[in-house]
Length: 223
Image (cartoon, rainbow, N blue to C red):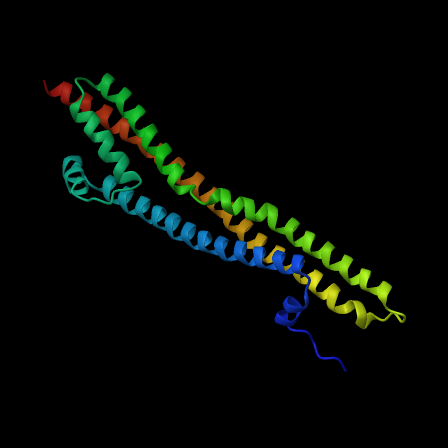
């Protein structure tokens, strides 16, 4: 009974083109897993920071204290950065109408920049998810062609003659899926998470403007 071929045996016995396909797919899979882990860390931190800041902000009755406390920090990101920029525009503007316009423009820029930061690496994951199956399919087709072309040199045809070639071809397909599936799952999860985070940023900005408007009305009524 013939022993089963290991992956290393299949790789070493494969043609140069199929070997190259396997190497490329392994490189794509390894790099995509690095991006997957990085996206998970970045978006998890963004969600956690969003929850913590919103909880602290809406439970506090002293906006100035929150502003001073968070402004001292050097690693502000997300809502804390949006709030600091918005509050600076509010206290420096001559009236609320000017402040509202500046807050809208400033926070829009900040949100766009943060969205770009959160989306870093997504284009690579999308590319891997789209291209890897076709690279694997190319290796499969090439391996099958080599397997059947070798039959012309044999006087007696048997399954054992084509089994190694077919096996290496199918391994190329499997590697293509191995690279593509995690990248696709991570891409879809990241897109949904980023969309949720950005909507939370926009909602917070709108609620913050309402808070400033109420504060401005209260200040006018005191005069």
